Length: 465
Image (tube, rainbow, N blue to C red; front, top):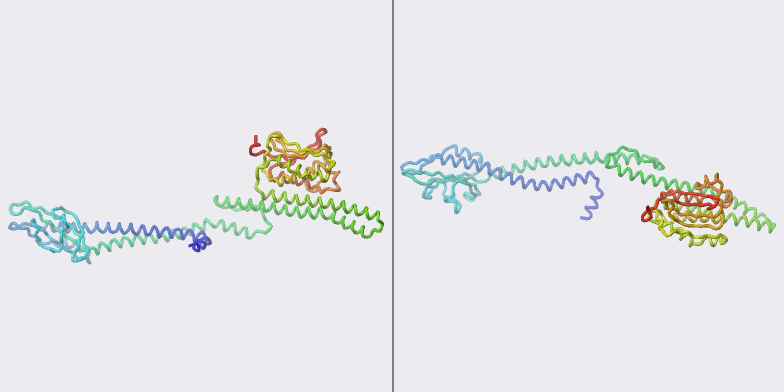
């Protein structure tokens, strides 16, 4: 049985529908056959009972009284009626007032309790064969004869059974013909319904492998859901491929210059004989290596953020926990111990729907920019501000110029103070995190508050107001 279901799961929808209708028709055919046979028997019984009753009435009407005794001349019309069942045996019996057989077959016996009962029908046997009998009574109230004469006429059941079977056969013929038509019609309908799927499959197979544009095919309303899901999947795949292309482009763009510079400095170092000059070149190589390491860290962080933004399920995150985690990791205390960093968290939860690791990468880049290019003290925190949830890093510096501010957040943008040591990807990473989770990157600077970089989101959950 499991093997049957496994094979059934691999069959086409047309075959499944045809098989389902066929099984339904088989089960319905059994029921219809039983019902048709029962109806046929009842129809045959009713038809032939009327013939028996007509023959019995003809015989009863032919009874006369002579010399105080009933006499009869059997009418031909009675037997002409019974001749409609030519293969059946016919029997009759006339029973006088005293229960004596006047004429006919003594083998025909009224059932027990029916001797004084009036007209009707009963089942019995006639010379060992099943038979059906009709009883008609005629009462005489004359001076020479006072009593009832019963006329019993019967016939075997061959014609009745044949008629019942014939009705059943004809009903089954109709059922088989209509069933075949239904299966054929179902197959045609299923093929018609599935034709849009074939059109979609043909369109997809003829597409260029790099073509991830939405499918624009006229399909029935029921198939629109599948098309929408497929277009959504291709849109996510397109974004992933674009992210991968950007990452490869970024890598080629950003690594070419520092790697070439390292190679040049290494060549100078190998050719230099002056120890003082060698120490100077070694210092430049170390500086370039550190810059290259920061660049690689930022590019990996960007790839991680873009990947998680497309694939990770959104969860409720308290921005205070993100700020606390970044502060407690203490990377700034090791790399820039001279910069004072403080934590500013409120009492009220700051809940958003996002991804914790992606938010942490964005805030780390905020903090790295602040301690590297800003001025102490630096403040990191999260709060509800004007109905919005924000997580921020603020330093006491003046921030970049307005022209540079307009470009921050895009790839490869650098401030004037960071042109030699930063790839400009830190704020681009934060910008990508904001876009991925429905937020935005906000950069502010003022004469009293300093420079502030924040991610602003719509609050969710218990933080919503």
